[in-house]
Length: 239
Image (cartoon, rainbow, N blue to C red):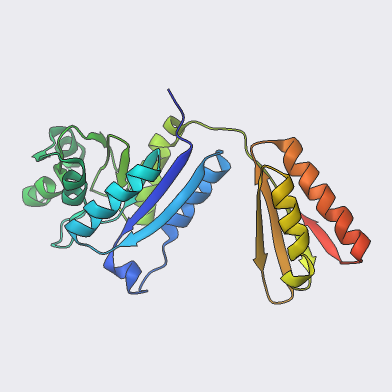
């Protein structure tokens, strides 16, 4: 199996756009995929509207090997993610009997079961052992509930399917502000085939070197440390 190297994350929910909740799902998924050696190319939030979900999903599919969608799989009127995915992929919505089985005996309302089990035709169901609505995979799209505990349960069941590539990272905390090191980071970014991130705080900067080659990551970090010492800039390597 070819291991997807690029991922996009599509978060569905008016509550995220309104600032009522933090998008912790996207943060969790992005970190898990990153430390498995994959690249996240987009994180996008859309409202609970079928046309917005479909339009954005198709856009993300063009730039990613895989798209992960969270949110909008429940029983209320604004849970329309399955419909949006079906529209994007040109598939019919059908009652998925496997999805029904995962909820029977746990969800009392037959109407609720059928709402959450109506999925794009051909979807592979992933059981939700924490909540009700199952996740599903169709083509190169994984769809999961928005409740963080439920998302993590489902993601844990499919994460290995994406494979794992070598990934290494080194972090350095530098005293001061970014203007002290901007030229150093630019030069290193041009020289090494790795990712170099600079994250400024009030009185220091966290610098992260990451990539698929341990040798390249360590070379870049060590060259950075030598340059800091030469300039007399205090730093601390982080674990």
